[in-house]
Image (cartoon, helix red, strand yellow):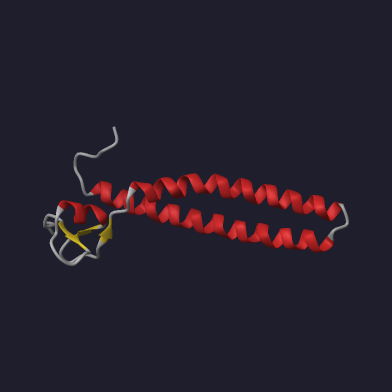
Length: 117
């Protein structure tokens, strides 16, 4: 089955100027679901946030162990809950990063000139 060329549609109502289209662009093949083209700023944010969250998790968990050693059970428990929350954020960030990279891979496969050599 031959695929028709992709159709670009903007999500904003009104005139489809290049400035409006630069805001959010969807890549649509007739008969297939939409592929959202993700801006690079989101990808950079997710990549930079992951090591920051992992280091924050390690530091907060270490401080929790230190406060436990100083006989502060309530403080250690609170810090353990905070470290658990940071760990959940790191896992969410990893899942979002995998999803965004998957969308980028799908978008790059659509363009014949973007092959890695």
